[in-house]
Image (cartoon, helix red, strand yellow):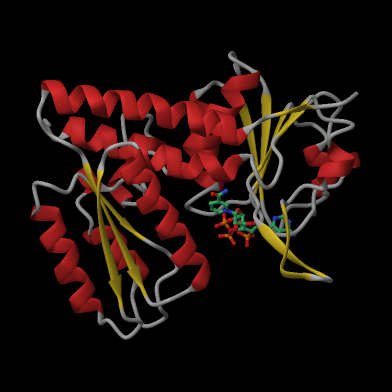
Amino acid sequence: MTATIIDGNAAAERQRLQIAAEIARWKEQRRCIPGLAVILVGNDPASEVYIGSKARQTVAVGMRSFEYRLPAETSQDELLTLISRLNADEEVDGILVQLPLPQHIDTDGVIRAVDPAKDVDGFHPENAGRLMRGLPSLVPCTPLGCMMLLQTVATDLRGLHAVVVGRSNIVGKPIAQLLLQADCTVTMTHSRSRDLPAVCRQADILIAAVGRPEMVRGDWIKPGAIVIDVGINRLPTAGAAKGRLVGDVAFEEARHIAGAITPVPGGVGPMTIACLLQNTLLTAGGRGK
Ligand code: NDP
C-alpha cells in the first residue's frame, strides 16, 4: 500500500484564499479590517522566523498586522501592561504571545491576561474549559489544522479509534477533545504509557505530537490508518547548516503502511498559521465587526 500524502501546503493555501475573499467582502460591506497583534519577547531565532511569517501572511490576506518585538529583559509587568492596552484596543481583534517566553516570565499569567475574546491561540483557560465542555470556543491553531487535514481524507470520523501520542496543553489535549467531539473513540498516550507500539497499532487515526524525531515506526501503524504527524524536529545533517526537518513519524516506513499521512515539512505546519488567521476572523466577527 502507498499512502495518500496529505498536502498541508495546498490545504493552507485554499484556506488563505477563502479568508482573503472574506476580508475583501468585509472591506466593502463593513468598512473595517480585522487586526492581529503578535508579541515576541527576546530573540529566539525560531520564534523570529515564526512571527515574521505570521505577519507576512496576515498582511497577505488583507488583515492588519501589529508586531511588538520586545527585548529579552522585558519585565512581566511591562508585558502585562502591553497586553492590557491591546485588550482595550478596538483595532486589535486577536492577540498572540509567541511562546516560549523567557524564563523570568510567568507564562500562565501572561496567557490568562489575554482577553479570552481575543485569544486567537486558544490557550486561555476559559477557551480550554469551553473546548473541554464541548461549547463554542477559540480552538488552538495546530489542533484545528490537524482536524481540517483529517477531513480532507475522511469526512465521517464517527466511531473511529484515534490514538493521540503526546498530552501537551497546546497540541495533544486539545486534539483529543476535538476528536472526541467528532465522535471518535480516543486513547491518549504519553511518556509513561506502556507498550506504546501496541496501542498505536490499534489506531484508525494516529496523531503524533511528541517532539521526538521519527519515534513512531512503520510497524506501529495499522495498515490503512490515517497518520497526522505534528512533530517538527531538526536532525543534524552533514553539509546542511540548518539540518534536516523530520516529524515524529518515520515517514519513509509509514507511507507504505498508512492509508494517508501528512509529510514533514508540508503537512500540519502550514495549517497552523492559516488557522491563526481563521481564528482572527472569528474573533473579529465575534466582537461585532
Ligand atoms: P511537549 O514537549 O509540550 O509535549 C510532548 C508530549 O510528548 C508530552 O506529553 C510527553 O509526555 C510526550 N512524550 C515525550 N516522549 C515520549 C515518548 N517517548 N513516548 C510517548 N510520549 C512521549 O511538545 P508539544 O506538544 O508542544 O509539541 C510536540 C511536537 O509538535 C514538537 O515536535 C513540536 O515542535 C511540534 N509542534 C508543531 C507545531 C506545528 O505547527 N506543526 C505546533 C506545535 C508543536 P509527558 O507528558 O509524559 O511528558
